[in-house]
Image (cartoon, rainbow, N blue to C red; front, side, top):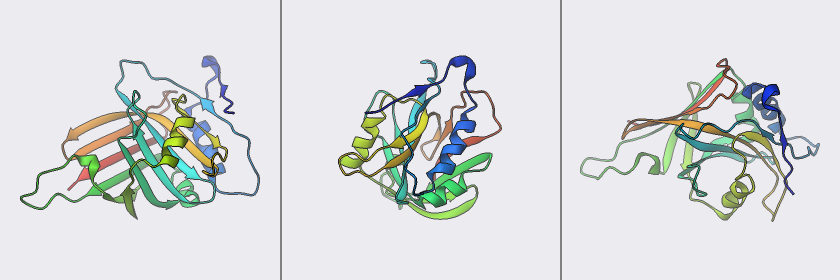
Amino acid sequence: MLHTECEDANHRQPWWNVFKPVLDAVVPCCICHPLLLFCLYSPPATVATVTGTIICPTDNGRVKIAMQNPAQTSPFVTLELPLHTSHFAALVRGETNRIVFTCPREPDGCSMRPLLSAPVWTMLCNGRKMGFAVQRTGSHKDASLLEMIRSVSAGAGLLPDKEGLGEQKYLRGQFIRTVGSSDSEAYHLVDPSGCFGQELSLFFLRN
């Protein structure tokens, strides 16, 4: 059963005060942590946002990022990163985090497909090349995990093993989507506290 612990609006902590300790805890350990969710923020309906979820297996498997439109259950993009949970947790502890995904243009004469449909992306994190992220179609496992946290608009927590899926830690938030052109899109994490000391942005570029 999924338990939720919400903070009073007058006592909300800055997003990263909650986000960073969870990242620290993502590194696998022998202690079994109880499920803990932080329901922090629901952006106004007038703000165009998408929901982003970072899934971190507690067995130190590969991290995934899934992006969904709020009214839909299936992600419009799911990427498996070339990073295991412990490596990812160490990389994103800084104040400003920029993750860039790049893919090559289609050969001359080929029709241009939608940007986010590219099967393979070169990934850079804070300017460092990490390897290749791979597009994954929605699996039953991913769909089940996202269904378990469908009611969470922003937060972080631990999902218990269910149906043999294994324990999964997750980070979930609302991202403002900016389309620069048919070759570029950016997703910026909404900062509910108004504290801009730390940021998380995802960039998709075709070059």
